[in-house]
Image 1 (cartoon, rainbow, N blue to C red):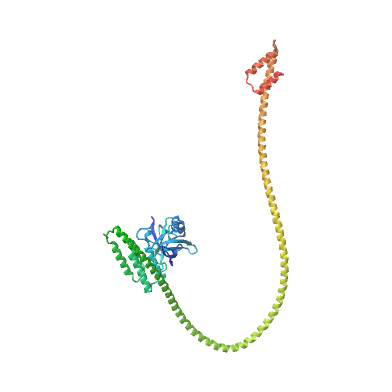
Image 2 (image 1 turned 180 degrees about the vertical axis):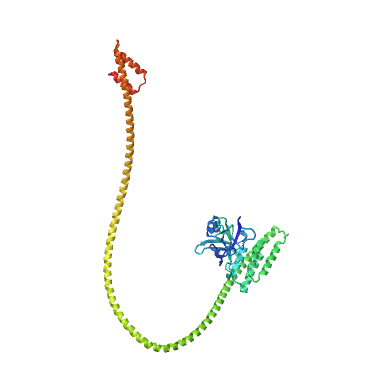
Length: 484
């Protein structure tokens, strides 16, 4: 299921305020959406997650809100068009905030000084309570027995101004003929000044959804203007005529702007007067009915009071005699209670003196405790310093122990190497001793010959010594033996 255009009439209404800044005609503010209840037209639920992620969490929407380019149109666009056209803009949304306590989205929008914006202004001046309707694209899912707009697929576009208010009782009918004439003149002016079919179609849709008495005549004017726009125009203006026409249009625009301002002021004044008159009439009607009901009640109360007065006169005579006896008894009881209260008051005064003495003792004890606490805090600071020093010393000792362990390990390694070298030296010494013994045997053997044995043996040993590969230690040992 693909995305579809979703247009909702939320349970929202707006309050109209007069405009003060340039390019704006007023302000609409109120509840724009409800995320705890379904919409009025299709009972779809826009969840809090949807507003958090797809509106307040959207950088595009927040940027448009900050730059005042989040435009809304008067009524939703017809057909499949989703984007908002600047030429159809009626409002620019300036504020959106979430109110969790109420479960609603509160918003504010400025009414633009555009053809559609002027229609919104005229409707608001007439007393119409306009509504706000959201526009976006997304998919609908059924979850937990409710139709919910999927937050993952929803793309928010904008809010549009709609004629149908959330509360049908909020509609205000136009009772003043002057006010109706001003509204008719304003709508007629907008029809005459419209230059495109789109603008006229928007005015037509607004008129169809209103309850103005002369709605049919205004709709005929819209149809006539549409027919004139549809007729082909063969006249081509020259450059000179274009400048003249442009100057005339500028002049006409300035004149219409001044008349529009005057009309707006008169319309606002009439709206205020109308509202004041309606309130005064309602107040007078209510006051008349209340006064009549109060007069009837007053007559009934007067009759009942007269009867009660006569009954009270007769009953008071009997009651006075009885009350005097009761009062005397109560007076005696009151005197007894007064005596008891005096004794209790004396005891309370004694207890108060004891309490003051106890308070003084407690104050002294408290001062002593404060001094002890001060001494303890000083001792604690000193002990903390000692602990820090001990910790530093402990760390240095640990470092020294670590160095000594490393030195011990190196010493052990050196001892192992020395023992190994000693063993090798002993083996070499033993080998040399064996060789020396062999040489001595040779010497003894040659000493028995007729020639000089020592010299001969020495020569033989020297020859053997030169022709044999020996280590330096073996050679030194042999030389020492020969020298002996």
